[in-house]
Length: 364
Image (cartoon, rainbow, N blue to C red; front, side, top):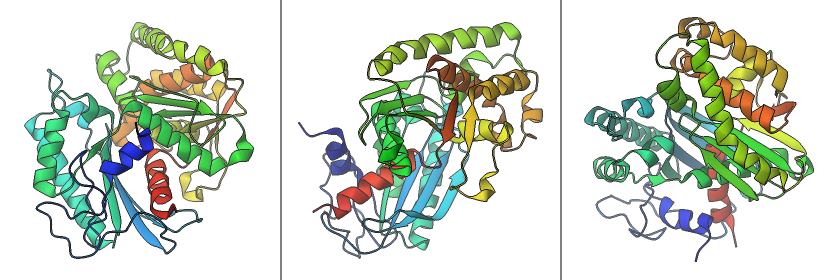
């Protein structure tokens, strides 16, 4: 049986028209084949050695945001960001009571994907992929929605499992910090889930995806009041710890991590509130988040309504409401894993997808 990266790239990628490559669903077409019903006027990037410069793009359909990332890359070089477009679609909040994505959410998603494909065209993207994570993965009609989005936009969207999210995020973290970082523990808080990876190599030895996303927990545990009551917060803490605790023993069985790394908007916002340098200073500025600082930030956020949180440094209005839940996850994760200080990594899942794709394109 093929390994998960091989399975992923068999269906998730196809070079397509200049600036408008279309990813494929499993079993539809092999990479490089012309898409049914889609005009192809430029040959796709072939598999195998491709040493020249490439402009690659990825559409990440998350629980909170749809994000188009475009990079310029070549074999042996670090991908350089060329463009980044974000739309706060908040799919997790558009799910119906029965767990399905309703017509409003599907219409918004379709329009967003179509717009991002057009922007990729305009940016001269040679090779584009699209993938969805927690919100659509868990929607009762997620596969049907993605089929209809493909029919309307020409873009097929791959559905990443939680384990694949964790592995690709870990790959990005490993490539950013390098082998000298030793055994890594990587934490990523999304809108729908918490991804955990640990290991010595590019492929982590342990991965876990837990239902501890900031949007999900806000909806399920903290929706009654703004700010929430003390008892609600205590119940949330107990739930979060119970979810993370089984993973702790598994990871510690491997040996103590050399470096703990945190990635995602939630961790970046918490680090900024705690005094880290603003992200306008660039990705190479070292930023850390200390366990004691997170505990203080949680206590501070718990006393503030979302409107006040939005005025804090590094916090957007669209994410202010869910920041407290994300901070609770961060605090409990750092505590349970005995992490005194986590270093913030500017690369995460999207970069992991691009790195894996670049490996595939340039492999001999």
